[in-house]
Length: 109
View 1 (tube, one colour):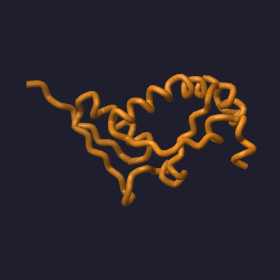
View 2: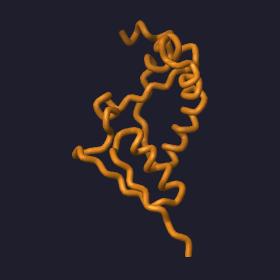
View 3: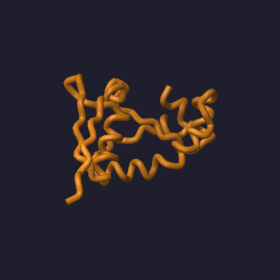
View 4: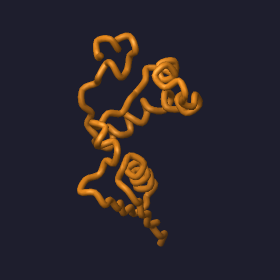
């Protein structure tokens, strides 16, 4: 009989939740430890907003000192990450156009 791995994830912030989902998806028995009364970490205090730039040029314009390689990876992989989260049952709220499209910044100011 094959043994099932047990994974302990310390912290229920965005990284911890992602690690727990990945480990569980790989067949591990996961225990998530969180000291706060709720999960979410800094994402919970950000208003539950995750920014999705419409492309690398937008990401570079908003965060010019950011790492271009990391921003490119975000732009390439975020759409499939959204799909995976929806498959897991996560529901998304309304989109905010000022976070996706630099052409509407003035409307959101």
